[in-house]
Amino acid sequence: MVPLWTLTPARPPLGLLLAALAVGCAGPRKLLYEPDELRAELRRRVPELGDRVEVPFDVTPAQIERARALTGAIATPSGRAKALLEAIRDPEGFGLRYEPARSSTAAQTLTDRAGNCLSLASVVVGLGRALGLQAYYVDVSDRIQDVLRHGDLTVRSGHVTAIIRTETGFAALDVGGRSLTTRGYWMAMDDLTAAAHLYNNRGYELIRAALERGAPIPWAEVREQFRLATRVRPEFAPAWHNLGVAHHRLGEPEAARAAFARAAALEGAASESGRR
Image (cartoon, rainbow, N blue to C red; front, top):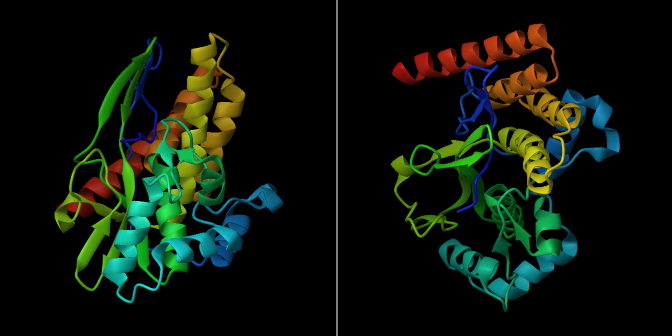
C-alpha cells in the first residue's frame, strides 16, 4: 500500500492531524478526460501554471508502445487488463515499485520505476486507456487507512488505486493484497480530483522531506501546493483543511479560519448528499 496524504487541523495551536482523503463533490461531475482536454481545463482553472500543467495519467508514445508489446495480441479486454496489471510490477515488464510520499505523473513514474499509490494508479489509467481499456481512478479510503506520527504531526492516510472495467467485471491494481473486485469496496474518482491530489500530496511531501532532514518545514511552499489543489478542484475538502493548517503555521489566522470553514462546509454538504 502507498498512502496519499491530507492534512486537517486538530486544535491548531497544539498540533496537526493529517486526515484520510475524502472524495465528495456536489452534483454530477465529469469522470474521465482525454489528456489534452484535462490539460486545457487545468490551464483554464489555474492559468498561472502555464506550461507547468501536469496531467497525472499522461504517458509518452514510447511508453504506450512498450505496453502494447507487453500485452501482446490479446483480444479480450479482460486479457489485456490482466497482462497490463501483471506488467506493472514484473521486473521483465515495467518493474515498478511503490514508494510512499513520491507523487509523480505516470510518465515520470515509468521513468523512475517507482511511485506512490497515486503514481502507480496513474500508470494503469494512462496505459490502460491508451490500450483501449476503461480504466479509472478509485478511492478505497473507507476500507484502507494508515496512521503515522511525525513529531507533533499525526498522519492518517487514505488510498487510491486504479480499476479497469472489462467484459467479465473489474480488474484492479492490487492494494495491500486485498481484492477490490467488489463494487462496494471502492468509489470512482474523477480525473480532476486525481490532479488535485497530485498537488495536495506534494504539499505533504515537502513537510515529510523537511522532517526527515531535520530542517525547518517550508510552509510557504507547502501552502502554495495546497492552494493549487484547491484551485484545481475547489470541492476537494481535504486540500482546504491542509491549506488552513499551512496558513495557521504561517501566522495567518484569518486565512486559516476561512480555509477551515470552507472545508467544513464541503464536508457537511457531502455528508448531507450521502444521506439522500
